[in-house]
Image (cartoon, rainbow, N blue to C red; front, top):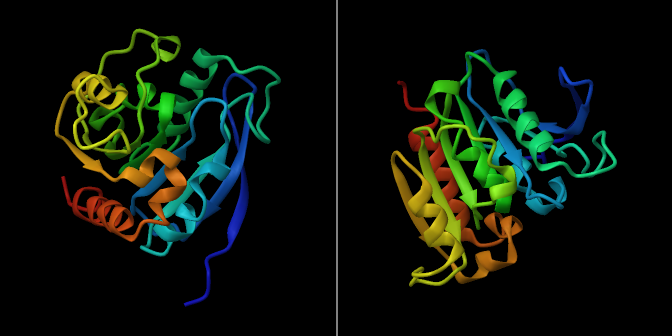
Length: 207
């Protein structure tokens, strides 16, 4: 099967900021979309070939640089501007079931978007609870899988702190290699299989 091509995309926010990134895969009517949100101070390159891997499963996959990152507008990284951008990006897919893959500190925002915004299933990679990204929004319910490299005993780790912060259905997946970041989602076959099964089971499932 030939590799899926990346198409450049731009998303103009109400604030006047333009987010830039890539889109992979088709867009069947009513079919779910998966949005990839990188860590603060990172960019979409941290996901490696994950857009193509998920696109090959039949999803439309969207990955954009947050404001002040990569090719998107903004010279400075403002955590609250990034938070607002994630919310508006998710809202732009109103009426479609949304999946998220979120890395690091950006996962703080993911804890506050959920079923009410049609964000059904989330994969959170090495999540960190970051007070700078907390805009006071209420935590919401979603089905979440936390993939981490903190070790089989997470007592006292960032993973435990974040996992305890989440509400709703949640599960943990540990793999030592995940300490290297979200790129490992496509390098470690067992972890990739977990992610694929997770989205197939929960994102496509009818409400």
